[in-house]
Length: 194
Image (cartoon, rainbow, N blue to C red):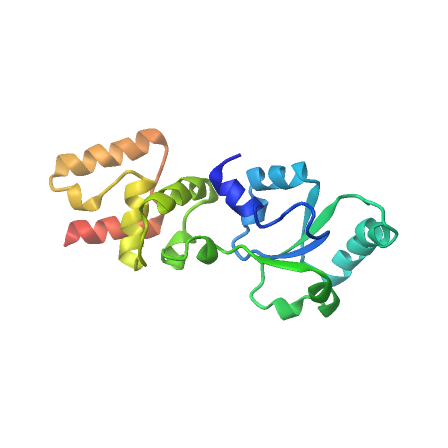
C-alpha cells in the first residue's frame, strides 16, 4: 500500500466503530487504491445522495444485523458525505457514527487548497510524498503552483529562459502524454510573459 493510501486508511481503525461518516468533499474515498484497502479491512463505502435510499440500505443490510450482534454484509460502513453542511445528514446518523474529515485542505494544510483541488487524483500520491519531504511552511497560491509544477510535472517556468528551453519542456510533456491543467499552464504563461 502507498503512503498516501496508508495516510487515509489510518483514519479508519478496524475495531473502533462499525458506522462512520466521512466528510469527503474531494471524493478521496472513491480512489481505487483506497477502496481496495477499505475492502481488505471489510469496510464498505456508501455515498450519501438520498436520505431515503441510504436509510433503506443501511437498515436492511447493516444495522439490523449489527443490532443482534452479527457481522452483516460488512464489518463497518462508511457514509461518504461530499456536501458542505453535515447538518443535512439525519441527526441519528450523526449521533451514532464516528466522524472523519478527509478533505485535501486537511491533508495538505500548508498548500493552497484551490490549487491542490485542480490536480487529478493520480497525482495525490506524488504530491503527498513531496509535501512530506519539502513543505515546512505555509505556501501561498503562486508558491503552491510552483511547488506542484516542480514536484509533479518536473517543470520550473523560471528556468525557461530561451525558446529552446520552452520547446524542450513542451515536447517532453507531449511525449509523456501529460498535459498541464489549465491553472498551471496559465501560471507558466504568466511567468514567461513577465
